[in-house]
Length: 93
Image (cartoon, rainbow, N blue to C red; front, top):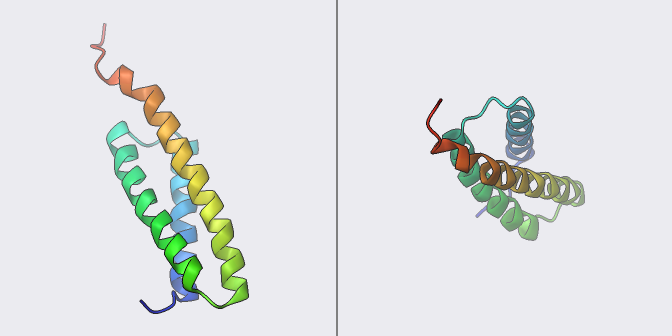
């Protein structure tokens, strides 16, 4: 796999920012959060793979930063889903 371009790296950062904002604004349903959780897991794997392959010091620093943000996002999604899942089965009163 060729080294990731800066544009691709920046696109990942934009995706992470948009997902963080959607979580902060509480605009995602549980089903959307589960989909995002899968996408976040794929993105984390991609970042880690590219991080081990890149030779550019600046990109490596940026990818380490993104890896930290994506891990925080993964934890946030997991905790939010744990908290919200029991409410799905409750019938409205």
